[in-house]
Image 1 (cartoon, one colour):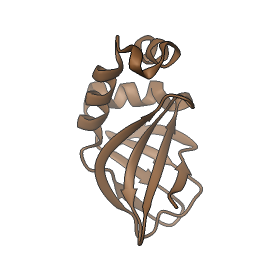
Image 2 (cartoon, helix red, strand yellow):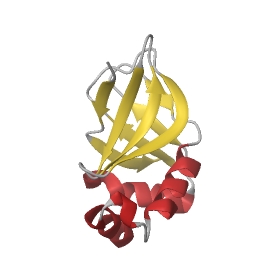
Image 3 (cartoon, one colour):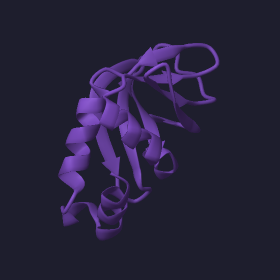
Length: 119
């Protein structure tokens, strides 16, 4: 079963995107891939745990900060109380997904509208 970790907040600090969670991220390995959850208006960065995948959920509430990081090509870090992990290829993957969603009704009109409005 795949685990889900929600990002609670996002901020730009020292030219880095900090994706903050209250959940443990120990042992997770970046998989360099972003998925789309059109039903919940989220992007999902894929990470690998010991025996399964972990979804890092990037909700709509942080998209304006994601936009700033995409424009400036800031590296992304997921940060918990215990540690931080750099999300490899985050900006490239996010740009690819955003460009694929724009004007693409396969993601649902509401998701397309939200992405086009913010990004």
